[in-house]
Amino acid sequence: MHTSRRTLLAATAGAAAVVAVGGGPALAEDDDTGRLDDERLRALISRMTLEEKVGQLFVMRVYGHSATAPDQADIDANLKEIGVRDAAELLAKYRVGGIIYFGWAHNTRDPHQIADLSNGIQKASLAQPRGLPVLISTDQEHGIVARVGRPATLFPGAMALGAGGSRTDARTAGRIGGAELRAMGVRQDYAPVADVNVNPANPVIGVRSFGADPQAVAGMVAAQVKGYQSAGVAATSKHFPGHGDTETDSHYGFPVIEHTEAQWAELDAPPFRAAIAAGIDSIMTAHIMVPALDPSGDPATLSRPILTGILRERLGYDGVVVTDSLGMEGVRTKYGDDRVPVLALKAGVDQLLNPPKLDVAWNAVLQAVRGGELTEARLDESILRVLRLKAKLGLLKDPYVTRRGVDRVVGIPSHLKAADRIAERTTTLLVNSGGLLPLSRRTHRNVLVVGADPASPSGTTGPPTTVLGAALTELGFTATVLSTGTAPTEATIAKAVAAAQGVDAVLVGTYNVTAASSQRTLVNRLLATGRPVVALAIRNPYDVAQLPDVKAYLAAYSWTDVELRAAVRVLAGRADPVGELPVPVQKADKPKEVLYPVGHGLRY
Image (cartoon, rainbow, N blue to C red; front, top):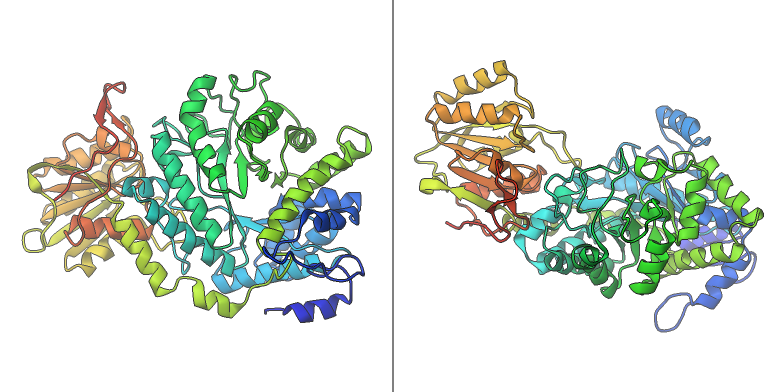
């Protein structure tokens, strides 16, 4: 239920409500911008207790679909991990300044529930003495990383947009995606990814990056920043100083980037410079070691030379710096969970995201101030940045959303149509020997759809083979669907070969094919049947190098519904292929040689 500002002010009876300080009057706004100026924000800070100040620096997960009445399993998870029952108790105990939503934490069931949860969180926070609104965030990159699924609008991910090459499309996706998040009470999005994916073996970034060309990535990042922020949502470029050239996933290990300082300036820096020039509200750190930028062996998240020396001083950035999740292995390998938040603040961080144990992290910061390792003035500096952002986003004026607002904005037909059109412009035709594509219903009506069915990346319907089959059926083909998985067994391959006997064509969805992958065996055995085989890379476009005998190959860059349906429209000639590779594809047997360069993309 939406709580009006008047109701809230009455309910809190002169306590810290929205922009009221203590028992005093509500703060006036600046005439021209509607923002609270620094003097007034400093007045807010001066009235806070040390414990409240420490809380403002944390952004925390919390389980449950409701701020006050989560399911019992979520209450149990909260008690076990955080020592509180629900979001309201989390805010009362720790006074956290931010909360991050996750699908696995059951925060994002549907748009109305998300809006209600957001309102419940704001109400609980503002009910506290000197209560402040909460900055609610999530990872809504689109493509393979999105926390809010259908019926919200889901756009192609970064590499797909990079293949489309349209900054207008990137900006539109940001603007619409941002407007939908804001309608649900989420005002900070951990997107866009500003990493330049120069390493095809990168296990953590890959298609989450716009591509391998630093200048092209910079242009797309700036466009998305402007899109999100025009919708009143803080964009967050990540992962500074650049996570594009790594073979280690920082969730599970500690990556080392061996770029020289000159290489960093040429390859990794341009998208972050572009984001800053575009007025980015927040930048997320990377749990990576870059010896050329800081030889200490510390991760960038804890590096003063990188965060203060380079980001603040050299690049001139004075917005909010948020850590990547403090539960990730990359930041925990060298120091304990009690030292990490203190060292991050000393390095120049403003928001401490999702520590594994909040009590340990919160108390460590508190003790560091009491013991003199951190000054209260240092905390005030970060809190001022966080409050400036909350003021800019309108949270200090009115933090609430309405169900009517959700209905007016989230997943409306015009947004869904825009996502479909943008997705069509990203599909890339890599191979088309003998003009096999577009497939015609007259000559290839009966199509067998096989391939990998990874779990839905973002609350879309899935599985991919089913989505592809349904899209073909919609266009007048007769589709038979057989899921063969990412590692098809001999029995599964035999089943697929038998099913191929009576059809006119086979469509196979490939997923991160390696030299040893049995997906190669599946495709080669299907080719041996003599039936026309069309392959669609549903994640990394690098798959095409492993399957050189396929006569028609498309890249979708993700297995979300919007990208798969668009690929089928291209495959069937209902849309022209206009996407171009934003990364080079190397030869499988000679990885130093390029098979398809950046910009490769065939037309009909």
